[in-house]
Length: 329
Image (cartoon, rainbow, N blue to C red; front, side):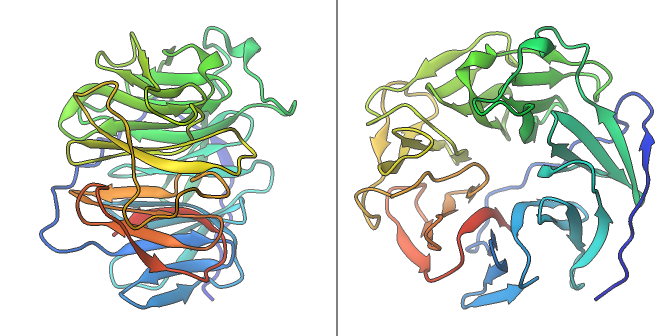
């Protein structure tokens, strides 16, 4: 085990100097999937290989400087190319929820609706959004302070922060200022951008799919043909939107749906190769795509994959610890 760096939390300079990650092209070969579970990392290659055993891995993200992971809600790990995983930072006063690698740094969303930047081994608290209009009305259904739940960056460099429950915030100036976009009562669970559509933003919400074509200035919702509107995970697979839907946060009836980007009202349930229903939500961060390939993990310890943008599926792994997150390498 490498020595652990525990950097100090220092005030950051306003704004973000980094440029966004270049969007990946569609792969010519099947991608490698990496799953974070309640008991370590599982690389499907093609047989499951386990690393960081004993750790609850709750977030994963691949970027230009390798792959990044959050373990036990408190530690950040990195795996550079062909190198072993190493712990690079730890925090003891906030819970770490999600990651967004940029070219020179990594943004981390935390409890208390805050952002942290990890750069050159230093952790800097960026913003807790106190100046954002409506901040005082943010909440969680269970009474705790709201959290940053997911992060995204557009091809034009706009940053999007999903606060649960506080809507989606946008920054067009690399984090110097933030503007609210969607009505936070929509209860957003995951925000996504699209590689070749710099003005488009998608979100999985408690009211179904939310979609904006103008950087979040206006939104429309689509829940047609879903068996229920509560959505936790979303991703774009080629020209197809994949989104989970269920009857609520403690569901016993969840499923995955697909529809083409430009065909509202045309959601269809993903069925071939999948169970009729899942007994729990397909959660935020557990659905990943690359080109026409897609995969998702479940709380029951299974991973399913598709090679045709969600038309057909096959089971890639079973018998794992509950899957908390999934990314593609």
